[in-house]
Image (cartoon, rainbow, N blue to C red; front, top):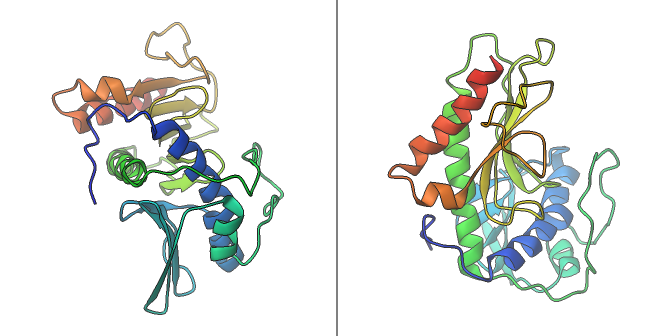
Length: 240
């Protein structure tokens, strides 16, 4: 499956995103964490999921849950968060990691979820786009930059990396979110860890301290990837 990333978002997108976030946080990431004590996710075929761990890959493909293990593939339709957790983990746990700064608030684990296959595919395409732009940024910094791995964080459900020295006040998170309660549409962001010049109109974030570039703005660009990279690079250069 593929999706037109640069078309207007369908009306079902926000609900699908909200429910996929629940699956990512309460079913897929804890499956990886239980296996190898890592929780980051990656874009996958028509969705997102874990990198390979202990011979397994847990992922969402469209409106299906998929578990690959030792060459075998099991699938199950998306119904509830509890069912997804049982499919990947064997049980549902509201708390599976104690040290989240802001863990995702759970919905009723027995609530029926509404996930459209095209929305899931679109989110996978957005994350793939985000990883491409973030990895370009990661490779273009200063030699002494402290650069983290790009991954999808389950609590925020966004792809992110960090660059720059925290001691020098230059470190920031750079990311690609599919949207959240503060920004309804997918967006790129730069979120400095320290002080910055808030009088600079580049720093336009309202729901957090930083800057955003929205999906709607990228749709209107002749070259969305170049515009996206330019936006992230502009934040990096301001902090350096």
